[in-house]
Image (cartoon, rainbow, N blue to C red; front, side, top):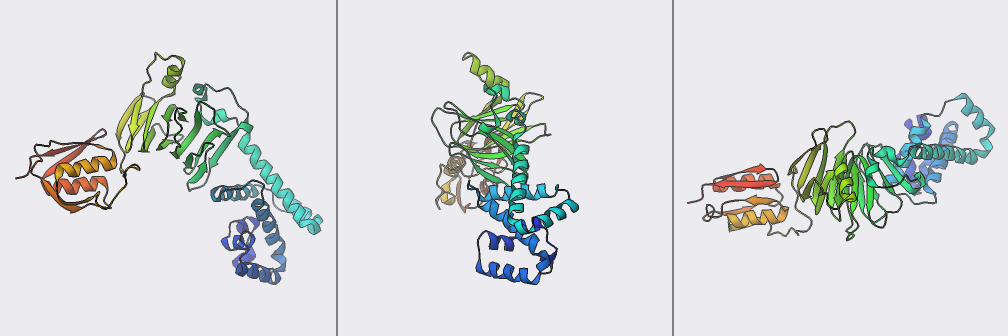
Length: 373
């Protein structure tokens, strides 16, 4: 209770107990704050100003998701920190004390307008320095969303076609309010995970730095953080193709120009060095069971199962190529439960039990064994 006596408007806007009263009208919270106002009349105007701002946010004509609402509050908080303090505000507050709700509404509108201008002043072209390769004409900012995640937490966003983008901390993305009839385009600076709805022949394109990632429907991650020399694309499920934007532009102008780049499938990633124009394709650090494979209790439980069958199950579960000499392993069997164990730990345990070893070469896992007696 003592700490609330020193709260500013922005402190109230981010306080859970305050929001329980304003947003959710919880009886206990409502009773607490009504009593608090009686006991702290000198701080009542600050509390009610915060309440008006929070209610204005809650009653916006367009529904906000939890993540978007969090970002909106944070933007308001950041902007209020730049409002000049004191004397002028004291005069304004005194002159409009009987119209407190109007003052709060005006402040909220000014802050909102300031944020809108700051978000839309720069054209979409600034998001990706190589937008010219998309073949699009310049578009007005009213036709595009410019999403900036300035928080330390991921933000989940719904795209116009129903696909989903998880925008990671300190990243930004731009995309049209409505995708074109022949393609879906997103420009990214930073880090994002995409879950793309399959739409037949309409490709989904992510422009990041000097790379284009092209998919029809899959889950993948793009990391192209400003200031870093390398870019990385990793696939969670499905298949994507990754190429330099110049190669992509050339392939679109002439069907006789083959598209250079790499094709990635589940649990594969590529690191691109734009300075050397080189691609390094490899397995992701922690391969996951692919979405298309239903993990049943029997998937990783083995009872006197031939080692070749065990490797085949792992290959199917993770979509990873595992190479072994079947003749050398013909007498090797395994009894173990590997459920809940990562792929590399599974391989370590399996190889240790049959006297084998493994190594990862690019995107392949190679098993070496002298056989079992």
